[in-house]
Image (cartoon, rainbow, N blue to C red; front, side, top):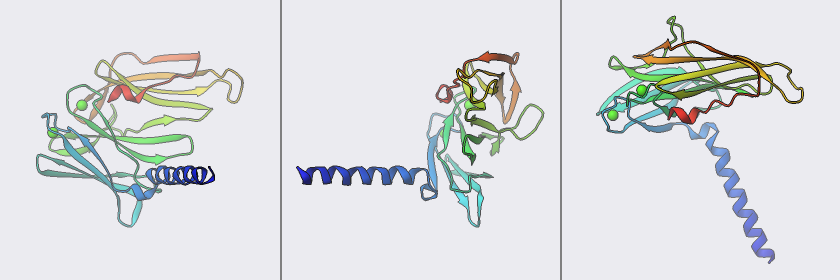
Length: 204
Ligand SMILES: [Ca+2]
Ligand SMILES: [Ca+2]
């Protein structure tokens, strides 16, 4: 009996050790499979820390034997797992990298293969575009997808730390055209609502 218990604990320790590795720098480089050019053939995307600069990551996509490379922000504690999406439902995947893993909020960049290069998606005014997720108790950020658009939620708590917290903010819908996000329809405001729960899985 005693031996069985010890074995169980030993197994638990190993499991926790592996979980710890996933979120640490030792997961670097990270790889994902995505169909970046939408030809139905899976492509490979790899991200690794830029040597000597832990705040930057090099993203390499291999598409039909050709390599495309770009460099973006990276969490200094290590390159985080890639997310594969198709936010505009055109059959070509985008890849999302994590630029910063804050205590409450994750900051991310969307990448797309466009004009024969791997490009960071930019906003309607040509500005760098970041996706945020999380926000702790005082804010809410996230994204979901519907009808070929990505819908970005941002809001603030009306009564941070209070009971039955409510949130006010807006949901902005974008289409992705090439590497540019364009506003799609009206921005929807919400006020005094329960915490929104945008679901990134709807973008997969
Ligand atoms: Ca492909
Ligand atoms: Ca797409």
